[in-house]
Image (cartoon, rainbow, N blue to C red; front, side, top):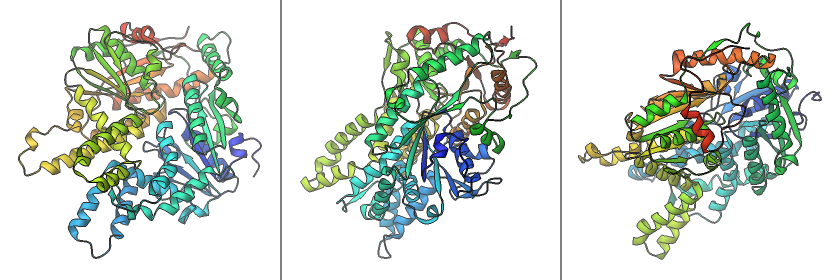
Length: 603
């Protein structure tokens, strides 16, 4: 295979390739383009998505499945999506099958109930991931397995699980956990050990840290690099995606974009500067379809025609108007959701500052493991409380509470078994849900602005919320208590209390993932209140040819949102300086950066 024209992460591809990084940096595009390049060179390749909010199906035009499917036009390439729900049901069936014929129906029902939580979903998805690393079954037939991972926080947890579960299972064959009998888990121990060994072998596994030429994703990539080294994954490469070079020295917007990217590269964290580095230029086209994906790594003329004019009317309103309307409600939960990297933290922080400006006390918090709300504020503001739901801290609080309640009535041996069970990695998911529930409850009498984790991680939290809701309804059914039962899910469904804001960039992939998120929310009877389009180029008046070509795609996405997806649409233009700090964030919601029907015409 001649790979000399490809980036180093293709030329030096090991058997297992992980593409990871902050949401929105282009992990899926680079992972898919790499898989295609390897398959085009005659290799047998499996492309795997571990993201619950994957858009591989749209990118390749092939429906995702939890079984490998062929990709038309790319002989040798197959792809699969590790579907957490399908994996969980298969896992339940395997555990139940081990119980034997002598187990009563009541005992089987109890085990199935134990296996109904979010932690079972996590371990089941991880189990399929581990099987591929262990080279079991169909996974053994591929020369390369390319993983398109979920955003950083979720991926770090996934890659830490082999070590966590092998440690938990070592010498532990007693009792039962939220994953059913420990004997059911012991059958996976060999697989988990093999997965851990493969991840730690630099001859087998490479982690490609994907970033944009932007300080925030670079800082997150640097933290990820350090964390992965501690987990034993030392074979790392850096891929800087979307590097832009201005075509016109007289275009201030293009010059500002290039200057910011150059500064980010010059000030790259040391943890990244030591890594082998590849730069992928910003392309004029959306990376959808085989032609575009092949051109992503090799270049080539593949772009939409440049529009004759940049005159644009945006069917959207400024954030100041949103802040006015939200403030009028007096209290409530504002959930800011969307794909990673679209600017949720900026929007959440700006709205929190705007509500304080309008005379309200606000609690700004986040469920994102890679939380940056404090960095965005870069200071304090009277009337604004800032926190984060820290998984480690919440797990310690949860374990202490369970030991003080359930453990109180147990003898010494029983307490030891209970504590041992609570050390399982799935306890963290339960603890985070309990913390989330407290935040939801707080919004009954005050404003709470919740900066959520990227879509896939947030959907798992929604799954836990739904599972708890069903458990409570089942528990009180027939006892006359459901009339007064209010679960966190009910509060999320209450449009007078909860307003969900979906944030997106005006690009095909973020918009499609936002639309899928909206569909998932609606299935849970949660109706989004509005969409926010962030970093719009349409209002800047740029004349740079490459940016103009990208603007054609932006217009299509803005029209798509306004005419068929969003009930209300708000917009924030691309800004030459990132809005960091209380003063700059407040400016986003105190003065209209765009009028309700903003017209931006090139000068």
